[in-house]
Length: 234
Image (cartoon, rainbow, N blue to C red; front, side, top):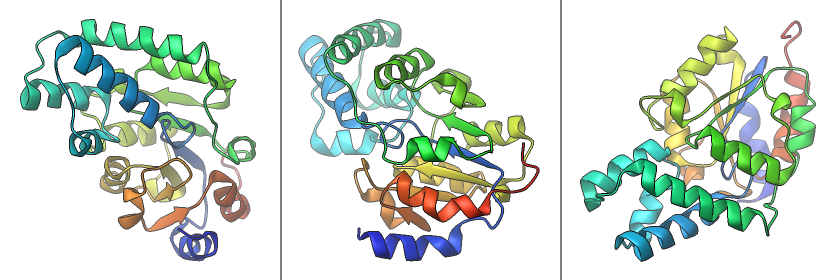
């Protein structure tokens, strides 16, 4: 995706007045989906005898952890409880993060400095989000609130998380902009009626095919949205 093409194509779909931003977390704010896939896939294969194909891993990209575990039970017959597998996964991930700092999205600090509410809607669990936020030095105070996997009965592509964010923000969908990296996330935002932009920096690339708005990075997004911040939004 070329920077010039993305910027030009994005301008028409951006709300003329933006009063809040909603961000996905993994591969939108921080480069983490591939690490999750590698660690989780290795754990499933070595400890539980479930080996995921490349196509299966690609299918699971962008789903909430609830969606991932539901699929593993129905499609692959995973027998251990989610709690057992999840505890082991968090241990493995914490060990990796103790030795490695993940990459943060370019332009994130500029976006978070814009004077409107910033919100996270993620299919990750809150303990996992906090673990990664500590790793990259991202303070939770930057965000009005976080909606995580525990807060939703149905994960992306279901719009429940985005609908709850709109309810808490008390704003119309047309005055909010979502940043996403995956097809399920973009589908969820669309179902909630919220304009959504695909951010390509860390993404797999498939989301660009269904996105009405695309940016190479959040730095490019900041340049496009900074003049559209609605007065009185705070």
